[in-house]
Structures are given as structure tokens and as C-alpha cells.
Length: 154
Image (cartoon, rainbow, N blue to C red):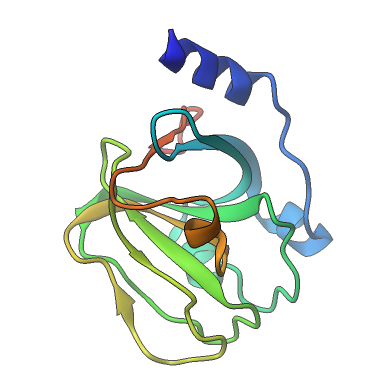
């Protein structure tokens, strides 16, 4: 029953825009992060599905609404390494396995840094959120994502 409620919440929610340039470059969707027994958090996410989109990511973005993020989608499980070059806002990077469970989180990443931030194990997705969001919403390694990709997005 709880899973049905989560899916209905995601399906009935239309994604909201954050930035005209992002809107032009990325498709959008809604995902739910389940954090704890009764906590579900809805996020509007930009989808970085192609190599070009994943390379661009949230670079040059100066502001991101609190309930907006970017979901990086990879075709196969791998160790994923990211950096913050040309990224002006601090982010939380949530590294997610193919089954939706959270593998690890890099919290409060440093803007404009060339330092590599890598997953602790092979993952399929990375969810980027405003820095501090994971801590504030108690998103941790016991959390998981509920997301139903459209054709061609997974």
C-alpha cells in the first residue's frame, strides 16, 4: 500500500522548472526519495541521460530551488567520479544503485573544485541536490529512490 501511495504521489505531480537554460537542455521528471519509515520527499529532477548532458550537469547554475535536483542516469553499473568544475552552488551527491538504494553520499561538495568525488561502489545513478538537503531530510544509506523512467531514459 505504501509503495502505491509513493507512486501515485510521483505520477500526479508535474515537474516544475528551475532555469530556462536547464529547461532547454534537459527533460524533467519527478522522483521520490524514501528516507525512513514514513518520510517521502518529492523532487523535480532534470535528467542527464546522454554523455553530453552528464558532462554539462549543473555547471553555470547559480540557484536551484529547494525541491529541484538533477538525476544522472548511466546505462550500466560503474564507479562514478564527478567534479564541481564550473559549478557555482554546493551540492549533495547521492550515489544510487540500480535497484534505487543509496550506496553513499558526498555531502556539501565544494563549488568550482577540480577534486574528484567518487562513488564508494558501482552505482547506476547520481542524484544531485542542494548542499545540506540530504542531512536536513535524513537521506542516508538506508534511503531509496522511487523513479519510473520513460522509454529511453534508462
